[in-house]
Length: 389
Figure 1: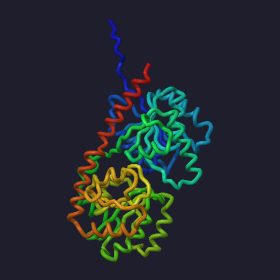
Figure 2: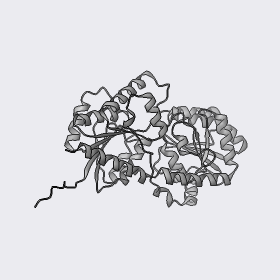
Figure 3: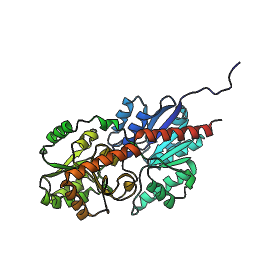
Figure 4: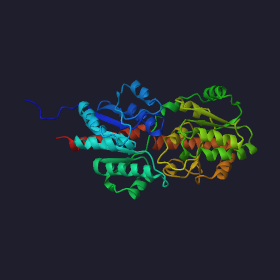
């Protein structure tokens, strides 16, 4: 007698994202998909634009995950929706997970037309002084999430509260899931070896104290404030160097600020790099003077590398960094406070060590990718079950 039990199969989860450059949301795709339960799910990534050559695409393909390109240059592309509709139908999608603005609009619309469940992760908290065009885009995005998306994942409680206050999305649609990182990338690092290797590469003396920031070089990351703080730090500790890792539209401006501050010989722009754990391992102190942030994954990476943190008390940052325990939290845009915090930690090796160990404990408890992937698994299966006939 034939069983009436449903045949178990893998569900096709389609991730739609604007681009696969080196931003936080893009880099997070790798650990999440690496950790995804492949007994339950068959993941696939659809990217809508090419950003800096889409370097993350290669990392995803090395995991055996297909990456498809459907070019959508802007929100006004009237052909985008039917092309995405056909794509999702062709790949037999069971659930769509969108990330970033363009994907949130087009991906959720296409999923709705196909009667597929959809999830969106909101990685950012926009600043309140956005230009009109950005505000219009955000309004379209929030409209799409309100009417066409099943669940909106916020990456911090502060981000969830922000969108509750600044959108008409019903509270029951929100779910907070912290971003997670792959701790195995940091557990087996040879810190002494990396310290020697990286410092030789950038011609940094072995006895120098190395401050580091890893970020896409945008104005809102606040790196200019650390550059302004550096002369005061150097007046107390001339052996300090500042390593800026990343690239972006603000690069030329930051170079000019370095020259104005007279710290050209102590600031190193490393450009876009893939060896972030090794660069962190070679450093002494992580600085993120950001002006707005939902939940910066790079802080979890820095804590996993046992670095003390100096960061702005903004967005979800206080949910990651315990002020006085794993780092120092500061008001935004305060170069004097930045300088004082850097000087205090450069001067105290024991305090840096204690803060670094506390940071490791926090990231292991709260920001492990295994916890994130398990919560996403439960969410996916629950939505798919509700939509299955």
